[in-house]
Amino acid sequence: MAKVDRVATNLPDLASRSSAQGNNLSAAILPAQPLIKIRVRKSWSSIELREIWDHRELLYYLVWRDIKVRYKQTILGASWIILQPLLMTLVFAVFLGEIAQVPSQGVPYVLFLFSGLLPWTFFLNAVSGSSYSLVINAPLITRVYFPRSLVPLAATLVRLSDFIVASAVLVILMVYYHQFFNWTIVIAPFLIVQLTLLAVGLGMWFSALNAKYRDISTALPVLLQLWMFTSPVVYPASLVPERWKLVYELNPLVGIIDGFRSSLLGLEFNWRSLFISVVVSLVLIVHSTYAFKRLDEEFADVV
Amino acid sequence: MRPIVSVRSLSKRYYVGRPRNNSPTLRDAVIEAINSPFANLRNHRNGVVPLWALKDVSFDVAPGEVVGIIGRNGAGKSTLLKILARIVKPTAGEVDIYGRVGSLLGVGTGFHPDLTGRENIFLNGTILGMKAPEIKRKFDEIVAFAEVGQFLDTAVKHYSSGMYLRLAFAIAAHLEPEVLLLDEVLAVGDKPFQEKCLEKMKSVSRDGRTVFFVSHNLKHIEELCRRVFFINGGVLYEECDANATITKYLKDISPQEERAASAP
Image 1 (cartoon, rainbow over the protein chains, first blue to last red):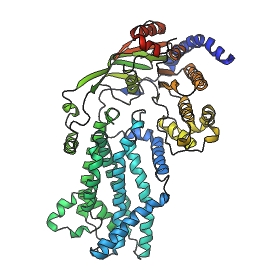
Image 2 (cartoon, chains in turn brown, orange):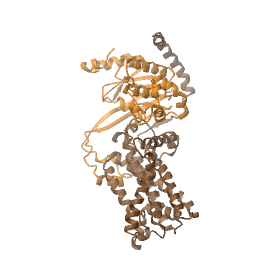
Image 3 (cartoon, chains in turn cyan, purple):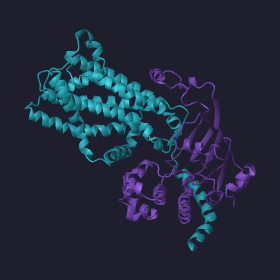
Image 4 (cartoon, rainbow over the protein chains, first blue to last red):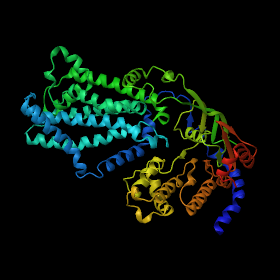
C-alpha cells in the first residue's frame, strides 16, 4: 500500500522531470530519419528481403512452432514424414508398376517412383500448406506487424525439413537396389533450391488469394491432383508424344522432377526442359511475389 | 521539441455492407489472379457505403508522453492503433515514427494452445518483437510476474483463463520498444492482478517510453495519461488538457453509456 502511495504522489513530479528529460532525449536519441514511415502506397521492391532478414528469428520460431505442434496428439508422430511418401510409393508401385507395367527408364520402378514422389510430395505439401497459412494465422496478422511473406515462407520451410528427412529413405533405397551414386548428384541441390523458390512463390500467391477468396482452398486440391498427373512423377516424361512435348515442358515441374531423378539415378538429362522450367519458374515467382505484395495491403482487412 | 510520432492527415476508409460473397467465385478468383498485377482491386466495390473510420487525423507526440485514447465503440480508436502498428494501411495521410514500435492489441497473440508456457514465452516474445537473448534475460521476471512458476512445462490449453491472461500480459509488459501501443489490456485478470498491471504500466511510462493507450476505463486513463485524445466518428479531438478532453467525452456520450463507462 505504501508503495502505491509513493508512486501516486511521485507521478506529477516524474512527469515534469521526464518531459524535461524528453527535451534532451529527443535531441540526443531520436534518429534523424524516421525508423518507420507509413505511406499510402509503398514503392514496390520485390519482396522485402531485408525485412525478412531482420525478422529471421521470428521465421525460425514460426517453423519451430509448426514442426513442434504438427504431430501432437498423433500415435505415429514424426514417423509420418517417412510413412507418407512410403505408403504412396507402395500404392503406385503395386497399381502402376506391377499391374499397369509403366516403364521406368531401365531403373527399378520403386526407385524411379520414389525419386519422383519425394520432390512432388514436398511441392504438394508446401503449396497446399502455405495456401492455408495466412488464414490460419489470421489472429497474428490482425494483431502484430511483421513481413507477411514470413507466413507462407515458414510453411514451405517446414515441408523442406520433411523433404530432407525423407531423403534418407531414398538413399536407403538406392543402396538396396545397388544404384551407383553418379557425379550428376551435385545438380540435385540446385533443382531443390529452384523447387523451393517455386513453392514459396506459388504458396504466397495462393495464400494471398485464399485470404480473399476461400474458393482457393476447394479448388487447390483438384489443381494439384491435375498437376501431379501432368508431371513425370509416376511415369517417365518419355511417354509423352513428341508433338506435345513442348507444351508439356511448359510445366516447370517437368524439368525439375525429371532433372532431379536423372541427377540421382544417372539418367540422361533433358536440358531443354530444364531450361524451360527455370524460365517459367522465374516468371511465376516474380508474378507471385508481386501479386502477394498487392494483396498484402489488404490482408488485415479481408482475412 | 521533436516528436517521436508524427501523424499527418491520416484517414482510413472501410466499405461496409459489402456482401462478402457477392462475386468471388472460382472464375473471378482466376480472373483476379491473372489481372491482379495490373487491375485496380477496388473496381468492383460499387454500391457499397464507405465508412470513414478515421478522418483527417493529425497530431504529434513527444518522446515519453503517455497518450490515452477514448471514444465510443467503433469510433476509430483501434483503427488508429492498427495503422500505427502497421497492421492496416491508411487510405490517406502519412505517419513518421522515430523509434521501434511494440503493439499489444490483443492479449495472448500467437499463443499456441499445444505448446507449454515456457515455449509460448519464447514464441510470443519473438512475435511481439523481442530478441532471444532479451527473452532469456527477462524470463524469470516474466514467470514471476505471471505467477505461473509450477505450470511452466504444462501446455497452455490446460491453463485456467486467468493464468493464460496473466502469462500473456506478463510477456507483453516486458517489451521494451520506444513506442508502445496498448488496446484495453488492463481489462484482464482479477482485481489484484489489474492493480499489478497498472503499476507495471506506470513504471513503463516512467522509463521515458511513449505509450498509446486505448481504454474505456476512464479511471485508468486519468491515472496513466497526461494527454488524452477523444475520437468521435473518426475525428480526433484534443482539448487544452487531459481533464477537459475527458469532460468533453463524458458530455458527448449518451446518459446510459455514461454509466457503463465507469466514470470516476
